Image 1: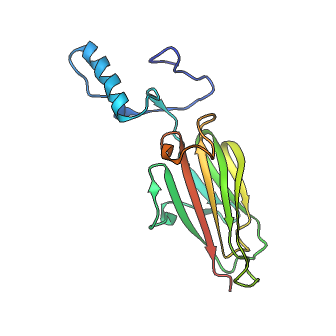
Image 2 (image 1 turned 180 degrees about the vertical axis):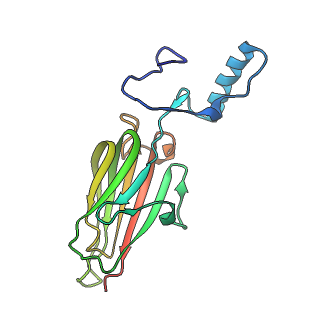
Image 3 (image 1 turned 30 degrees about the vertical axis):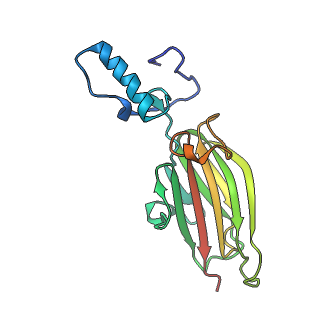
Length: 195
């Protein structure tokens, strides 16, 4: 692998993308160019080298009905980009409440997906006053295809927070200000009309 510095290469990470925005246009003097490049890196972003791991999800779907989750489901009131994506996903009211639901998350390179938090709302066919549950999880999947079985069909609403990261760069407790740099956060809000 070609390297700018001796210690920048990782044998375990296969695909990387260059952050071309860090590279300053060519200057006539090569000594000044090197100095200008270093100064620009220091001012714009933390020095992560010229290589960068894309922690965005390439595709999302509910496997049982092949419902693709894309930009159409981006929440208009919340952020959908720059390291944070929030999706509002309706569940058809005619979907049986005991149907298994598998969320498939695909990435273009091997990454870790953490399920950081799950909030379960009221249960359908119980009183509307049924209490919701909010739990913090630290379950993970690793690879390019990530399958999550979610108990969403029998609930009025549920919210899931997933964090996508390269190995050893972040986890659920990493400062959220590093979103878009070391990881990408995804929030899925599922809701349905129960009657």
